[in-house]
Length: 102
Image: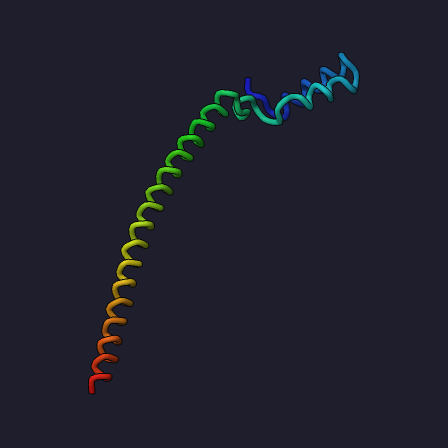
């Protein structure tokens, strides 16, 4: 039998007849507000933890891969920039030397 608000209300009324007004309220506060199918179990939490751990491992791997690619690109770009600066300095030095000869 599915638990509905109507069945909860009938249970509360019957408990109130048998136990008085306070005990049924205490008992009903300990029941879930919806059916038991909507309540997470320990197994549900274990499965969720496994999924989160798996996701964390994949993210860690992906971040490591991204870091490696960025390091490689940064290294290439710095080498290219250094080469351009050295080439420009040689060109300027050549012009200065040529200007001093004249």
